Image 1 (spheres, rainbow, N blue to C red):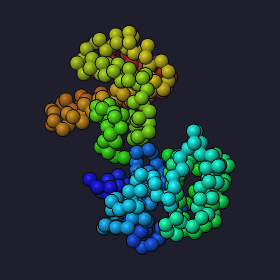
Image 2: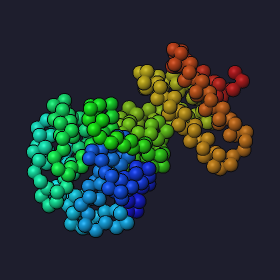
Image 3: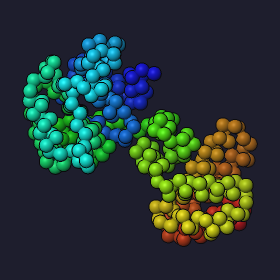
Image 4: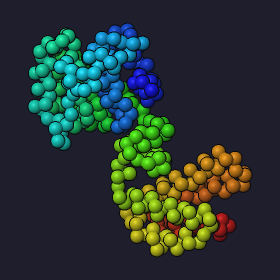
Length: 316
């Protein structure tokens, strides 16, 4: 799949909007891309830069083969600059250096493009320095700022940019992105049941406690789908030692729901008997009720033990 097709698949509305802006010569002078990591912000920024400098546009898309496209891909084009955090922040000296560079005329054309990654990490001094530059840009300049946290960008900077919201990836695309990042498919599928944020999913997957909790909840689930009362004992012997904190206990319900919803989805696909589907849907409802009790400050252990009994002996 070529670059344009990938971008169109990731963010079809934004791709079509920006294509029309190029076609009609109505590009803004500054854009603020807002959305989770993995939703295409960086790729769109580079695509726009190549769109401007490409010498062989094909179907109104960069060719990715000309000298300009290749240099932009390799971060070697003299009129395209990228700014990334120096340590934990983007410092005022980095923005001053950018402004100094952009006060000169373009090396090869009159146009210049700069892209700022993680713009929310600008120091106050850097943000104020950039603000002045956005208010009074010198020459033909296109600014593209990227952020995962719009609330951390100065309102005055936001007001001088066209803000484009990158939608979270749909589940299938998020699973694909997670697998591409090195997470196995089963874990990626489970993570998408817990969050639709690429960043959060990766963060969760790297947590050693989560990986232990996932295995323990899987075992608990396995006991319950077999109507094995070991599930009751398992709460006392194993689970209370792992799910100690409030946020951990909340995740225990989320994980169990994820396993049951996956089972229900597979059963529907396999056209299981109506009785089986009703039982599985009923267990999902029991988990939701159990979580409500826990949120009403009933002991987590008591709620889980009662949940087991209600699952295995529904009339109890």
